[in-house]
Length: 248
Image 1 (cartoon, rainbow, N blue to C red):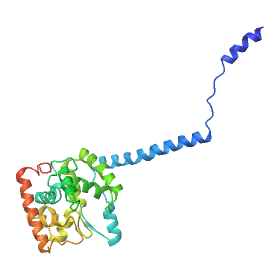
Image 2: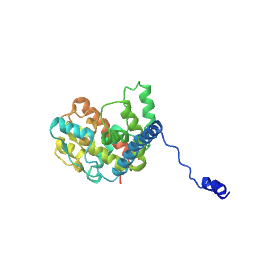
Image 3: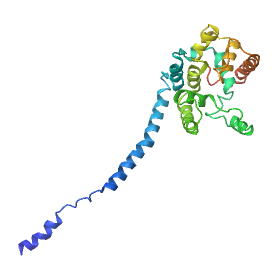
């Protein structure tokens, strides 16, 4: 009788054991964790890189590394924005992205105009080019454009306009194996970037789309004309306030 009464109590005290996971379930859980990290790791890495380079100068880029391997050496010297002639900054903006101070990374008017022209002319802004030059590679691909489209607003959000332009001018190629405006000023004109004249700055800005085939020191007639137009554009954006976001 006593044993009969104790039996339910012993059953009640038993702990339920969790069902064992089969190999297929364990595999599915492992795949889910792996996919989660596969998505999160690049996002965390990109966010870290954007935050880091807001205050730390990029030590090298893929393009500089590739050219250094191809040529054996490159010319490069980092210079802060304060060491760059203001007319050089205005010339680069006038040549590459006249509405630099007015947009958030993408110039929608320029994109619309490019589409209407059948995408014959580019609509890439300075922030887009900075993202490409600092974090990505030069060859065109849908993958690169997709990453660029995601990272550009992040850079615009974290970096100041002045910082974006400073980094751009220090990593852009101004001649074969010549990276950054300081190296370019010394290579083409024998002066530091701080001493560039309006004409010299306009010529450097004119070579940016095709640095391997254009000569800033001995420009072709077309390049002279292009530089003259850029010089006028630099004066215009200084007068109408479109240079205010990156000037002291």
